[in-house]
Length: 201
Ligand code: 5GP
Image (tube, rainbow, N blue to C red; front, side):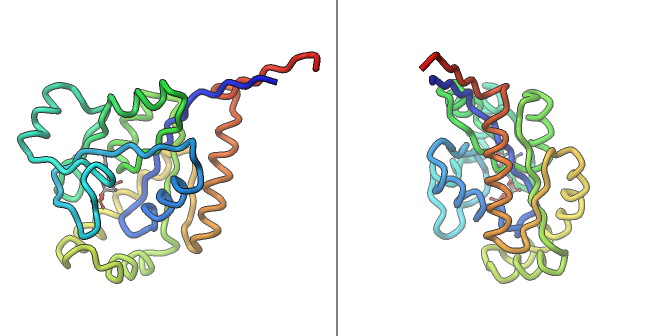
């Protein structure tokens, strides 16, 4: 048997505080075929974030340059900061047959889904607004203004759920991760990206 696989574009969205980042990290650790698309952003790094790993942290001027060069597959302003997916990185990954994971907001996700209809889209939801509020406060990575901004944006983001193919409620991390893996496993076997060839023996 011989098998050829085409790379998958996997877009994951969800309000800040849903545990989306943790799910993505876990996925990248457990699935060697998955690569993270490192976005460019004008946001300042948080403690522990590394340039080139979590994001490419760039200046407004550099962001404008990249925009002018049409270097972004999609870009959006989220919570007052600018973020963009680097076209070259995603296209090179897919070309190599890799599965590319994009952790991006609904504006960017919708734009990618339009440009690339084979995109697999997953929306991660918190079990309740109360839990979301608590998670944002206890993770302690943003100042109170930033938390308020992220909470008020959550309502608008959740309204975009209907545009996604899959929804995963992250009530319990292990269960949510299992569900995410099941979606990915099924999507890997779609005949648009999986081509097994069998022979006599
Ligand atoms: P954070 O600042 O918490 O890392 O990310 C804030 C939001 O921006 C998250 O919803 C994240 O998914 C989104 N985001 C990160 N990178 C990109 C990107 O390249 N494009 C878009 N549209 N959103 C992004």
